[in-house]
Length: 298
Length: 298
Image (cartoon, rainbow over the protein chains, first blue to last red):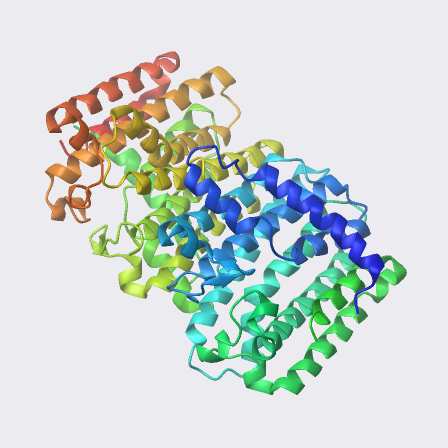
């Protein structure tokens, strides 16, 4: 169960992120208009903004200015949005429905969707270069590096590549874990670390604890995704359900079964919460996000 | 005619860039291996490295450390290489030949080529975040912003979008110019500015003169490209000749004719050289690059 207190905390921050993304994305009247309209279509008005929420919760731990965290969270969300647009393309998952709407390439064509993803990635780094996000500019350069490596071939894009190579193969649980640590985990970890690094109050040990939490919760997120894909109707998901099994993609459900996948997600949640012990009661929001992720629909 | 002196200057720098790209790109043995092999295939062993050369020549004007310029030039080249991989995809130009080799998607498949482009873009920004490239980290953050905006929806990706929208239409020369200022010009300007900003010795007026030079030479580059596409055999180009006309793409040749396109390129070269007047004889390499670009094959 997600508490009312968390819901109102999250809703306030989701609105801020939405407003900031609105402002960061070029207006649809600015040329090239069609590209900008498509970028806005892909980013705005949807999504739970889990990654920015994680940045906010981490930023609160480190005493970060909330303007800065909003921008850092928006940068991560732009990367996430680009990855969804490219993942949905016909040469990848070939999906037609995302967040209850036609996917970007269905609405705007494949070529435009390709450019949308490319330009959203550029925009994310433009945000990190353009605004003051950390007191020390060297820390901010470190944030650029963090987000870039989380997005690249040894992070998210690498996870996609492992995913591609795995279609039709049966993966062991450690292999699945390796794939997901890259594919979704890297960006979730970056969200927590970028949020935290907008402030100054965490030392390396605390950043490491936060990273461990984010790594575990990122994996839990994926296990829950697999469970929902196998278990929930399309209407609830806002995307096509059962796609993974249809495409013969290895999932936790195919590797462990449904019941064991659910209990694995719970185990990951417990381990993630344990990683927060050093923060004592300062980590309330992070604990709530863990619940928000793991308990979302089962 | 390109002088022997310039050829040896350029060859030394092309080797440095090649070696640096070799080191920056993850080794093919690092997982995910297939993605890393494809990234290396797309980047290494080809190309004239015009953008890095421009960064070097600009860096020499500003007293920049050559290690730093090499890294900045490599970052620009990674962006350029990603854009070629994505441009060649079936949903874009659908080209099968690049630098005399099968294009990335022909060799590795569409899905991998998509990820190659995505990951090369991330890697470019990782380089700008990871290494010390400017004495003042705030200047380096400005470089991140510069490269990101040159790559994004109001730069290179935007130019591609204008290009897409123009297929089958007859563009006026100003419309063509707008397209190319985005599509190739933005990244060429970024190359010059990034190179210069690795050093400290240029003031804003000089940076502006350099920017004007780069803008004009970027446009000249495109005009020459159109001329070569219409005029040269495939074997000389290393990519499929005559594609633009076949796809009913507007080009300078279709708008102005071949002879007038050639003289327009010469005019742009002269204007570009004039922009270098304030540098007097310190701008030798930039002048040689202008010739290298405009006189390359006609």
